[in-house]
Length: 412
Image (tube, rainbow, N blue to C red):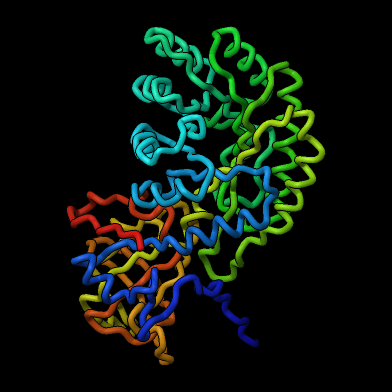
């Protein structure tokens, strides 16, 4: 029987190659390793982030606002850079709020979400003027009491748990019973209660899923989000200033995946604005994106410390691992483990290939960064780069596991 061809990764062409090495920001990785002072390290390329935002601006209607979801990568230098190229920020904690406010982004363009906000977070958001995406009736009452006690009038929006989901998404955030947001059928009453409490009601946040590479699924979810927002607006009788329809735009991580086409999404949004814009009272429509803006801009770089062969299989043992990059190890949401795109970063122009597994220094078989990847033969001292590492990398990893040092992060 003829062997079926193995799927391959989408081309990783976002970084140039200089003197045979990957060169984010035009700087060869061996030089960046010296600049970092040690391996492992993360490096994020401003030019790639800017190109991602520019591609979105080109494909989407001018009326759409772009917000960056800081949870994807909260490194202060990344957030500071993005403050100059996006229209707002969306947060998931008080720590992210402080990073966002330090950039000078107007608080009115910053919102905070999360199903278990503490009193400290609610009070801090009220004091700062950040929009609070309320996720339950009890949270609304608690917010009103805390803010009222200090004489603040908090800005609020209602996060909606829609009665649909984003099909084919990597992580479903809405539809059915969920800890996130308020069930759609209960939203009008909650809006009226917010107004009754004299809170500054700003609008709705509808987020149904993430990491989607199918434009038709995103188009369908956005159509349903506009229809739902219009219905909730009419049922509540209150005007909407801002409508956040979430994001869900994915990037290709695994073999066989392709980059998300933006054109059909932009065309659909233009039609939805024409169809529903007047009925929504001219509300500002916000796309909230994290991974799509920063994911492709990042590399995780570690160094080979040993090369060994065990029963015919080559292992490249590195000083990096799952404690720094849990997602690349396959232990952050994957059901069937698949490799992130990986390269021997200082041997980019070598044609010879071998099958090798890249592992870390931890005492667990889970510490696997690449399983039987086709790579140039590598030796101790060579640099291994994991692509698509700009989102949910370091801060999504168990950095205290086995007490190894944290990696450096750099922006170039």
